[in-house]
Length: 327
Image 1 (tube, rainbow, N blue to C red):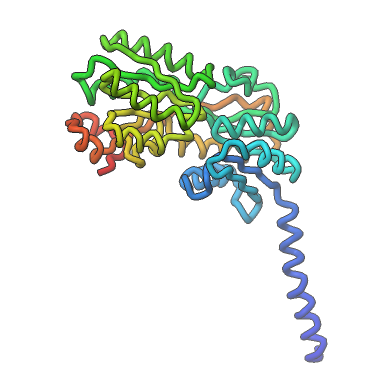
Image 2: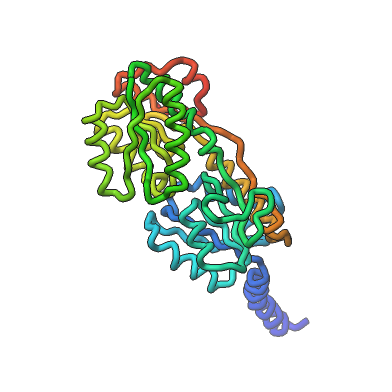
């Protein structure tokens, strides 16, 4: 082969490679990933989601593409981000937590949606039943509602001299607030504690909530969950530190930001399972026929530095039981 012909052939092959790569990429299924956080807030969750995909044979960049849409901790951006994913005709939308799921649900009735939430999806109107969702949504829930009474028990174990505690709920999310109030009130009666119910549905409510806590002389605070309060876990932890209030929530974010203790379903494990379900949808399974899964792993996190600042002696049983102790 003449040198000039060889160069021309090689050049043509080199030019064809990017085209071939782009063609292969264009044939990959595309997942839309919708989340209210900022991208750097919890990389362990997206890593767990990708691990779940890998468990069923999908590797990002090799045989699947992911379009990430993070709202930067601004829930008001979620509807537009969900609409953008729908416009891009993604194969499936993976959405978490509930505020992102509701935005995705409002944006499409045809594209499959896999959710990850900490609440009952039937009460939230996402699915018809856990065993047969019946629409274009299915997904994974955490054990947060079921372990709500245990949070009060753990707080009581840390502050055994307290005779009154408070529960913070968001009245704008009645399905969550009513359940948490009911089960926590029952646990308080069992423990012989007086329970005060406090409400917050916006950031401006937090100052008055903590001021009222001090006025009531409540010995501790249980944060009741829900999309709004979950999204404010770091702010609530900072305020609990500032007001020197022993408080318990359901996620590690709260403890990492200075909160005393958290107890709840493993969010990381739930994201992994959501990744598995997303992969199964890509393989052709219908959300309507895929029972909602429940992530059963429970995690306990403690902030020993905060405990010492509050003058709390953490029982050795809790230190041994904790998945992580932050010092």
